Length: 273
Ligand code: SAM
Image (cartoon, rainbow, N blue to C red; front, side):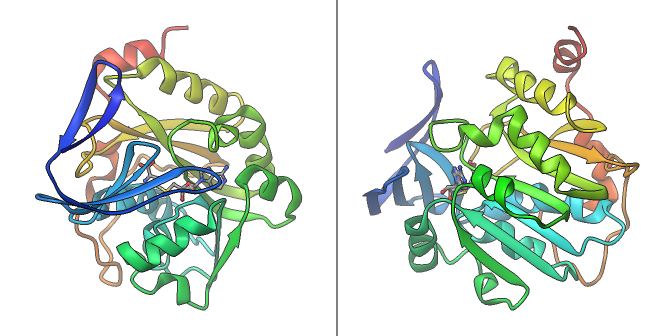
């Protein structure tokens, strides 16, 4: 068995068949287990990142609310996203160019060899993979984007710079007039609401509008959070028609606005200064 400790008092246990891979890279400890229920499960620094049987639940809901809400997303930037599944979901849309910046080359190699969640996305001619730190990249690169997606590990040594006001301000400058920033919230609304609200407040001081949403994710604790930051007049919290050309298994754009309906206790915390 292996446990993902969300907080010292609470964790989620996986019954494991065997450990498939383990390596401490320059940036993080990567582990892959073959589990009884979910197929292969990727852990980074002891925290579950994604499960083979159901990872689409996380990657679809990270990507598609923004991609459906943007009227014509052409240029997309992904920060993190090591498994290649976020890239795969973005490429379901008729985008022109997607850049993915991940700090850990080893993570990409391991994902390609053992997980294969990208399903060929790394080879798509619209995709470009850059190995480097996300904050450094946005500081130095001059491009502008319609959608920026942060699929980084939860706040911790390597990813901390991606949960700062400095990072959000630079991203805002790199966004076109009407555009969307999305980050996985790195927190559960029930277990660590105060940490999530800290991130929300930083984003609120930068973006024109900020909306938190949650969705049930296979293999993760209930109440996992995502935070959108809007530049311009885009309304992300609306329903959008399902599209024939985009095949989805978990996320339903016709019910998109339900994502933004938060439990009362959390709204009270969020709107109390
Ligand atoms: N689904 C995820 C979760 O639940 O946390 C995130 C998955 S993805 C594997 C996280 C990626 O973020 C890793 O590949 C890691 O290398 C990358 N990462 C962490 N810090 C980063 C940074 N500062 N710049 C770019 N990528 C970073």
